[in-house]
Image 1: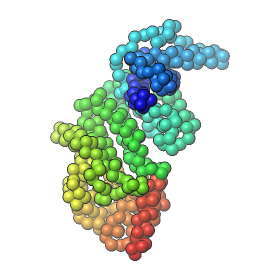
Image 2: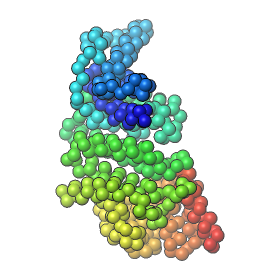
Image 3: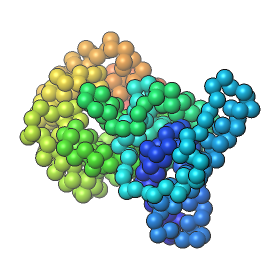
Image 4: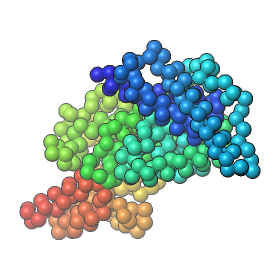
Length: 414
């Protein structure tokens, strides 16, 4: 279908068109609005008139003309308000910008760095990345994070204003600043994927469209920076994790724990690609946190059954991860691995040390893991209490339903 083909074509073109406009004319905030309007125009005209021979040039032309209109409108508004500092259009805007030749440069990586500017909050970085680089509309971003479109509009508008006020140069930062900003880029992509894989709110366990977007953007960064091992590690982690998605829910949409999943449903192509990626970078030297997490995911994915999983290796990898990225979630996962190696009591002992960590105080996962280990240890009454606490704290409906089903089973069996 032509409409579907147009949609698949527009999304990867969006950051290229925006990069072309910002590189030539600046005005990130208005350029982003102009690109969105060009995308809307294409989605209406192309299915009816056919896809142009050079879609990218068509979009840049339309977006450039719209940017001209927006800048002239901005100048007129400022003139009307008799601002103290008059806004003067640069000479480049005297003629129609669409007359400028279109180059083949891809500035997507620069856009990612801009969207992950340290002046922005993490939530703003994510929203701006999805809109400016992912090509999602504001309505789509709002739906992805279950907030009203007006709320997301304000968030994105503030983010664009912060970018404008920062005076950031349209270029990939260098030296230490580049390393710091690349870490922010990877962190944002990691958070987008995590939210897609385990939704923190709403009726669904995962959001396949958001997961696909996170993987697509990470592939883009990997293509632009193929020599960065942590970029490779993050891509491998996403592929190896998303490979299990087809088996994570039953026919009724209910959550299926990994131990009970039909592994024949796992995405073998993603597993093969992810294992190949992580196997290529791990021997190069000191591994970062994304590489270690990808290695853990690979051990899970390569095991034919839960019983054949190399839990001692997974526990050892978590211990390495704790040395470079010590946080309560890693400690929680480490406790699970230790329990699989040494028994549930050993895992529960590690969980006791996490009880006072305020970062997990409102997280259902601590109580869910405790409940599972207590159930495994045979303490059904304590397990039921822990499951009830986890269910109260869970914000996603899929997790709530799963936890309540465990409570009901314990009540029936008990």
